Image 1 (cartoon, rainbow, N blue to C red):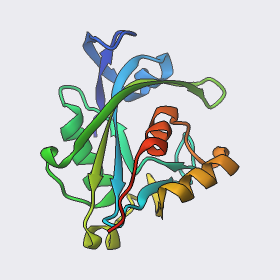
Image 2 (tube, one colour; image 1 turned 90 degrees about the horizontal axis):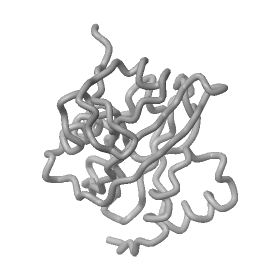
Image 3 (spheres, one colour; image 1 turned 135 degrees about the vertical axis):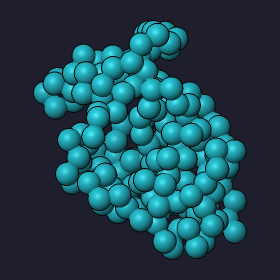
Length: 182
């Protein structure tokens, strides 16, 4: 199977006009686009994924409900729908995703051999009770899903930030939201 190709961005987020393999993107620290999706249960709890213990980066850490690279020529909504299906076993339509914000992230991992320079679009989605009950972690990507109230997350993050993938803008958004319980 051919390696995933990703559209490259200039450092200001504008398209650079070419694509590269995922391996090259991260070896050279090329700017690219990804998508983050925060899924909520009907009762307002937030779905966090526990990244697989097999992941090259950030294994065994809590992360956004699902996330992924935007394949060359694709857009963030369609990539988000694909990621929901692959990582969580959830089928949604692009218009089901509620756009929240764009953010940037720069990170050097694995003794500076893996560079993650990205612009990411962040979305919110509310799952049905049935979808929450039947979440299917993608082997090799996700080990489990953990549901937390906003306050449970904030307390855990304050006490143990090292248990989470570093997403400051996402967590600032979670801190700012008012969640209504079902």
